[in-house]
Length: 215
Image (cartoon, rainbow, N blue to C red; front, side, top):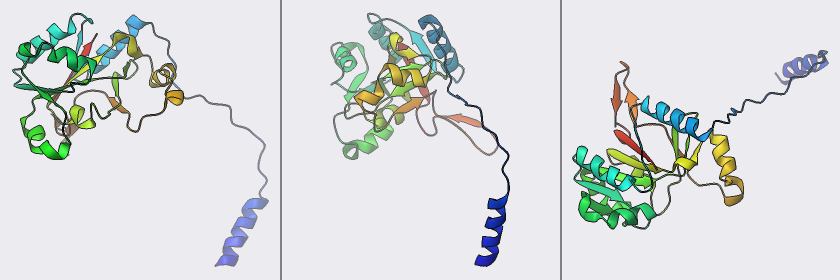
């Protein structure tokens, strides 16, 4: 058996190979859209997959969030009191549904989180116009469960952090020098899944609603 294999390999090696070279290829998408077009593309792509995108401002997003909580009849809102946005919400706690701080290990309150939390709010690292995606870096203040478990996920996004492509986001935010995350998330809409009959269902493996507040 080894002799037969050696004979085959020997014949292959003896074959003359025609000279040639492959032209260089660059498969990286490059776009240089202005800020207004980035916002428009980002919004259109997310709305196309049934996400909500609301354009607000640093001064007006709290009022918008209050109204959205009322419109959705939320009983509570999960957030981190250590973040800037969490502190801003807690300063006006009386205007919101019951605020639930994420301040315990998940093992201590898993049943309550999975069955008793209506919505959560997290920050984001940026957005990608090309794909309509949010960039999240979960950490100790805003663990992955906050954007995964509650049926409604509110995501705060700074308008100046919407990039044309993922590659631009990495370069502009200098991930290489500052350190790569242990878990970088790209979220491109609410959770959706289809069965063998191709019946689309939302909220099976994550939030049923994704609500983005661009400020």
